[in-house]
Image 1 (cartoon, rainbow over the protein chains, first blue to last red):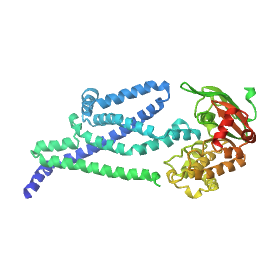
Image 2: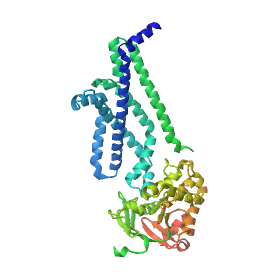
Image 3: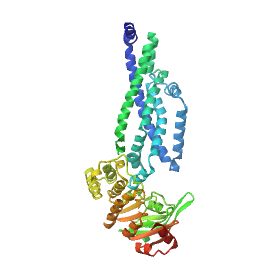
Image 4: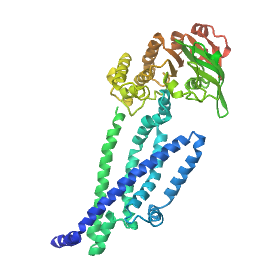
Length: 229
Length: 248
């Protein structure tokens, strides 16, 4: 027992190694949250654009552009995308954090777009007709009637996407970002202790996912109150 | 346009609607005057629902024109949203907004579109809700109500916009039989107050009792129209005689 505590001390406390974990934790959260916001914005814009394009021939070009985006992003591994962004496009970004946020955001946007689109299509057509018959414009109906219902329906799927995104950011180390995973890995190489940093790493991710799941459940329950009988 | 300036609140001229290759309306013309209660009857597939949905342009006609309060709705320059505010519509499937409470369902359009202050919109909604006997359900959600209650709320939702015309698209067809009466009662009361109504219905009793004009649509045209006593008492065309023999 004492030997293990001694080992923990050497791995995490000497040289203030634990600070790397704290910083990495911060970077992982920062990248996840910012990428998520970008993803939701891109996803919503694309989903709504495609919803409009469905019955408007003039918007066919929009439809094509959106399809190219989702196809390309879904076909390229996020690690490859990340490296293309870092080594080819945003060469001046030295820390890689901005690049990571943008790359993960754009990646997530494609998945969000498909999710939100399926949510919009699942809302009964009568809802749009009822809103229009009251005199709402298509945009007003979308904002007040269709979109809120779509989001409610796909919330569990969005939760999954958040969790997937959090875990995907563990490849940010490829472009020199010191995220949670890279921090733990650096400690492993510096201290020659593989067990403790990696187990801790796994536990931190697990804890984060459990917390996210709990938060989502609370949120979902609040939205579901209109389903009660 | 001068010849269209008449007393009709809705004036339909040679209305045509084709879905892909299926010609549903083959030229329907009718004037609906203020205070009219027009019931539209006909077999399924005769185009009655399409006709009604064209009146507020939920279906865009492929030919002809629709004048509402002397504005041509089929003219692309017409602000449809503005005119739709004055044409309430009640759907077969209610189409209440499930993510809003009953009160929010009633007040969202007046607040958003007519800029009615919230308190005033709620006051009006509550008084109308009380008249259909549902004041105690104001904070419920649509899924907590029965079909008949939902449809009464849907009627009130349309009324909250203070429309000049009410369009009913088979308002009782999706209801359990024991709930049809409560909805027809509300409509009957509305008619007695002088509301202009166009009702697509299978309720022949209601059509006979409440309407002042009945229109029989058959195969995309008006096959016969007139006062309910004439139409039901002495139908002239054979198709109507057959139809009535089946439904009465």
